[in-house]
Image (cartoon, rainbow, N blue to C red; front, side, top):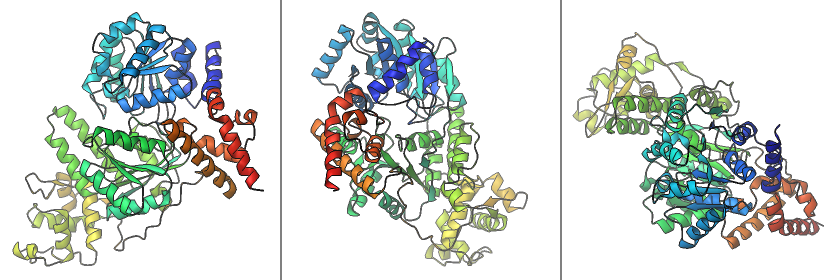
Length: 607
C-alpha cells in the first residue's frame, strides 16, 4: 500500500472516526491519489463522497464538486465543517455571509472542497477564477445526469466537459450509483478526453429488504406498513404533488408525524420540513421524487413508493436512501394497472426521438417486470444491472415462496371478454363482465348476453383485476388511445387467445390477505438487549437536543450506528469513546464529554 493511501487510512480514523475503508473505497481512492481520471459506479450508501473527500485532505488542494441540488451541497458543507474539513458552497441560495466566507477560504488557499451546481460553475467567470486559485480536481456527483440514456438526464451536465477543459483539463472523478452499460459508455464519451479507470462495484444492498404489493386500498396498506416503524424516520414517494399532501394528511390523522414535500410548496416551508426530517427522529416525509437526492441522512429506516416508479434506475436510487448506515432497512412499492398505463401514456406523449422513446419503454417494461416478478426480487433487480446472484432468501417473494401457474385458460376468458366487448373498456368493466355482474352499463351495452358474460363467476373481481393487470404487464393487452382509454389485445394477446401461446401468471386468492404490521427490520439495534435499547434511546434524545440547539441534522452529531455501539460497549471515559465507530478527534472534542457523562449517569441510575 502506498504511503499516501496509508495517510488516507489514518485520516479516515482521525477525522471521520472510521476504522477502515468500505468495500471498493480503497482502490478508488488509490487511483485518485495517483492522479488518474476515474468513473466509479457504487451503490448508494457505499461511501462515494469519501472518494473525493479524503484525496482533497491528503493533497491539501482544492477539489471542485459538481452537485445537482442546493440542499445536497449545503448539507455536505455542514457535515464537512462538523468534521473540521474546510468546505464551502457557491449557489443561488447562499447568504452574503456564506459567499464572503467561501471567497475568503478560496483566496487563502485553505479551502479543500467547493460544492457548486453545473449552472453556477458556468457563470460570472467562476471557472477562470477557480483556475487562477489552483483548483486541482473536478468531482462530478450524480454523473449519470450527463447521459441522455440515464434516467435523470440534465442538459446542463453536458457542459461539464467544457468546464473541465477551461479549468486546464484537471483530474476528473465521476461518481454515480445508477448507470447501466449504455449510460456508462455515454458518460465516458462526454466527460473524458481519454478513457478513465472504471470501477464497477456490486449493486447489492443486502441490508435493504425488498417488497412489492398490488394496490388494494393503498392508504391502508401504507398505514399498516408504517405502523411497524412508529418511531423511525422514512420516506413515502408519490407520483404527484396533490397525492403527497393527501397522504401526509391521512398519516397525520392516523398518528404519524408526517410532512409533505414537493416543488409547489413555499420554499421556506419546504426547507423547514426538510430540516425537521433531518434534525428529528420519527418523521415520515411524504414527497415527490424531487426529495432525497440531496439528503445524506444515514438512518432512514424505510422507503415506500405509493405509486409505481417510472424505471428501475429511479427505483434503485430512491430505495438506496434507506439504510445508508448499513443497518437493516425496509421498502414497500405499491403498483397497479393504472400506474402501468399512465407511465406508458407519458412516454407516448413525450416530445422525444423514437430511439429515446424505445429506450424509455424498455426501462418501463423492466420496472413492470420487477413488480410482477415471480422469483427473487433482489435477483431480478441485480440482473437488470448485469449482475448475477442467487436468491436472497428474505425479499417478499423468497419469504412467501410465490409460485406461478398455467393461466392460459383464465387468460383466454379475459382476452375473449375484451375482444367481445369491442376492445374499448377498462379492467373494472371487463372484471364485471367475467363475474356476471349486470350493471346498468353492461345491460345498456348489451354485454349481459355475450358468450363470455359470467364465465368467471367462480372468481372474485379482485382475482380478475389481478389477472388483467398481469396480462397488461406481460404485453398481452395494451391501452387504447382517446379521452377514455380502454383495453385492447396485442399480437401476443391474440396468440394466447387462439392457443398459439401459453402464459404463466402469479395466482391471486379471492380473499384479501390478512396484513400483519411488519416487525422492525431484524437487527436494527444490533445485538442490544432491552437495557441497551433503553440507553440507545437515551443517547438519541441527547443527540436530538444538541442538534436542535446547533441547528444541524441529528446524524451530524453522531449517526445511529455510533449510538448503538455506545449503548453496547458503554464507554465511561474519552479514551474508550475514541474507539467507537464514527468518533473522530473533532467529534470527540466537541461532544465526547457530554455522551460519556450521559452514559455514566444512565449506568449509575441503573443501580
